[in-house]
Image 1 (cartoon, rainbow, N blue to C red):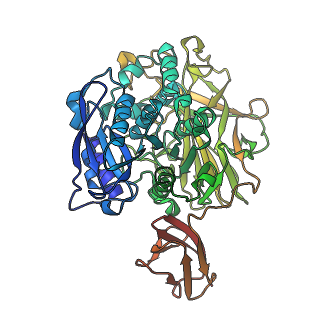
Image 2 (image 1 turned 90 degrees about the vertical axis):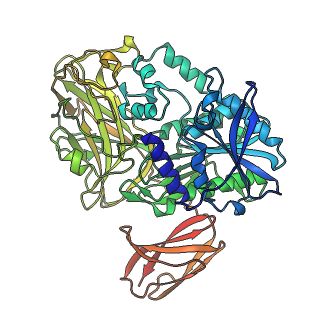
Image 3 (image 1 turned 180 degrees about the vertical axis):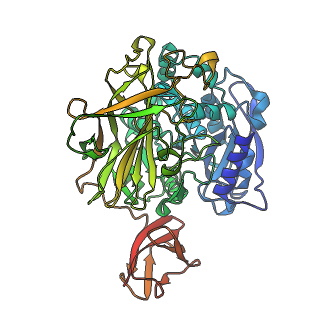
Length: 627
């Protein structure tokens, strides 16, 4: 129940706390299963016809009575769209209709075609929603209902991959516990199959079907989401294999966002963990509406001429566009772990450094790509709780004299020895700020017994003192480590409770079918080996070019005079709702009311500031200079 409360709280946060709930029309629609399911229908008025946005949720359709998504909130009369909300079969209003033999995609097909027959529908229907609400969009699209026009799945991963449940062979404990708490109940099945076997190969084959997708999709993901690579995989496979012409019409939007579901951060919010991205606020909504306007309302808004990929370059805090992801112009650059704990592009003299691990006192999970009500999400400083411990190694680049632009997947290739039969290698990549904060970007883990593969036959235990090569998989990112900062890699043997703790004894990994238990733990001493013989290193996808398509302005805006010592004027193609000025630390200094197109910087100190211009179409951030 606590997870449901969190989801309702999140929806309230997204849509705004309301003193009065929206009142939908509750209707029943017939299914091909021979029964009927209940839906909520929200119409802007009772006389018009509208394109429809369909949302299928396992979390209770009643929560949308707090307000509609996409920035519409309770102002439904101003919406160009009607909304239809369905509780999945076997959930909430449709609890009594549970039938394990019925595919959610079939229910979605029936609902799309029923909507198309209604007098209030224009016959064009799109789908929207994050996470599980995104996965079901793929299931519906797979069935190819004739009136499904487009889809906007967010932060989801509909494919059932082994690596999504076993990161580097280690069970994702917190993630599986959350799925159980949400009522999906998959952990018992997952833990019964800790190695890659027929169940996994069958599940993967049945949940990857890009050649069945025939509608254009706007796939929206986050660099701090646990589904980052799953979203990128779907974009890649659908772009290559979807039924034409849909394959040429898919778009990807990647922002500096977490998954959401607990805490203040969600897809489209400015605050993410301990950082703030002001020019990312509301972008997922404004871009989705642009996509829907083009496909559902036939608005000639230039969507068809947009490059396929729009992504946020963290650090630079820029929205960029490109024709593909990964971008084609990065240079793989090796950064070697040095004997003096630095990271450099040349190898060092030979050395070996110890990191120990006690399973009863694991290195704690602090932020990151989590999905659990008890864990923070997103970028958090690792210094207080992780780097203050004794059971880790850290390696840093020198303080950068110029920006280091990373775009894509970082590879981690290490040489490791241990005094036990099995252990884990867990790494975290951080951006170290001039003030000492070590802000988490990425994490990954690899269980050594399955370093050569994840089938039972691939299992290979360790001989004490023997050095073994191991690679740790990390998700994709787009981050500029700014001049004056450092890139850091933290190496431990645990990251708990995100990942299962290794008991280091080489025994059964999940005794009694438990996700996590302390069973015959052994204290382990591991070593990372560096130098020319054992060149442990990261491979960074570095952009040394100026090839990126220019920073995006979501609408035309001019600022003058800039620099200024008094008044700055803002001229915009869109009606300005709000102007906000921040200093470079993120502190809000000034905020204007609606319909203002001028700010006074007379009392500001000389320097550079960020001006956030908010309109109905979205937000744009500009640098302003006070003389």
